[in-house]
Every structure is written in structure tokens, then in C-alpha cells.
Image (cartoon, rainbow, N blue to C red):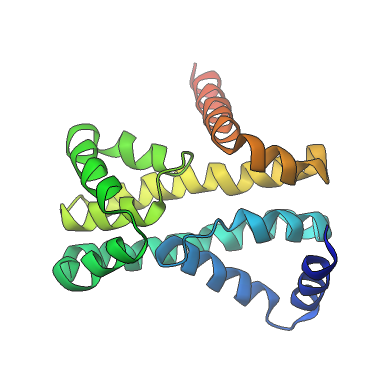
Length: 191
């Protein structure tokens, strides 16, 4: 890891509020900060391997909290706050495309957002704006982001320092592979 990043992560780890900050970072990444949480989460997991599953769980909880907030913005405040958020993140075209995909594909479209490069902000606002059922939205977000964060933990445990580079170069491939492993595991367990 680079010097400044290492120092920053060391300060974060030593903070009494480290886990709360991870939760907040994850919630912000899900709502208004279009910077991937993985840039912080992977190095943090590398330094805290003994708590790696806890870190993944906290990242997931923060993400789902942010997703719920974004859903409610899309549902009740889309014309003001939701539209502003889409424009602020530069995702107007992606939003319109995803809204159409969501209406056609539903749950699967939401699920795939968690493992593909479509900004999560687009999905949650579209789900709220189209009044997509909240329970199905949260299930799709929880499953897909769970696969993402627990998959990152597994990647870190298996590949160590190389996990950051693997994720940076192949995030879509890694995400889809983790999804395939998850689906295959479900199929094998229910046969």
C-alpha cells in the first residue's frame, strides 16, 4: 500500500469509531459519493484480516441503509432531490436506461447492479421513482451487495495484496464470477 493511504488506514483502524466510519462511508458510497468503497475496503480488509467478515457485514449494513434512503428519495422526492442527485453524479442517461430496464426486468435488473458498473445510486432512485416493491428492492440489494462485499473478503483472504489489483483490473469479471459461484452454490444445495 502507498504511504499516505497506509497512514490514513492506520489512523482509521486505531480510531474508537472505525467501524462506525466504515458504516458511514458505505452509506455515503451507496447514496451520494460515486467513489467505489472497494478503494478503502480492500486495504482495510488486508490490515484487519481477523475481522474481515465483520468488515464485510458493516459495509453491507451501511450500503443497505444508504440504499433505503435513496429508495425513499426516489419514491417521495424524485422531482427535487432525486433529480438533483442524478444530475450531480452525471448519470442522467444511465438513469433513464436503467428505469426502462427495471420496468422490463425487475428484480434481476436490480440484482445485477450490485455486481456490475452501473452506479448503485441510479438503481435505488429508479426503484423508488417507479414504486418498485421495497421488500424486493432490499432483497436484491442485500443479495447482490452481500455477494460483492463477502466476495471481496474472500478475494482478500485468497490473494492478499494482489486483491486490490485484481479488483481494479477485473471488477466486472470478478463480480459476475462471484455471482455465478453464488448461484451455483444455491443450485447445488437445493438439488
